[in-house]
Length: 103
Image (tube, rainbow, N blue to C red; front, top):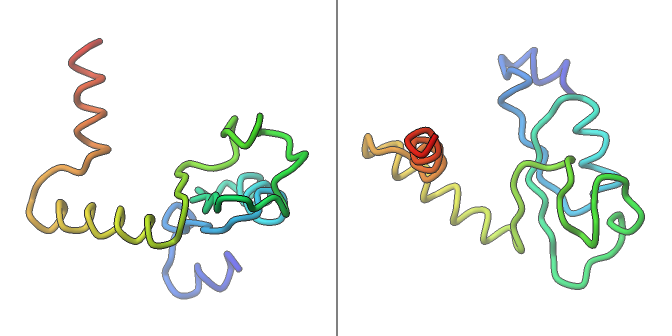
């Protein structure tokens, strides 16, 4: 997959694995050095239980963002795109700036 993406001019750090299964999707993605967005659907257990890197479904290391639904993720992406297009900083940039000021 990464070879095909590279052939299209997509860099590894531009790939975002978006999936529900930690075991089948996010653990291999992390091993490949890819960022992930976990769609943590309520009641979903397939691919979640027994995954090293989670404690009671909470992140310990194999995903970067977590959303309850794809719709929630789409809303977050839209908000970030609007902030970027308007020349403003994203929420992530604002948070990082606040952490730097507090340090």
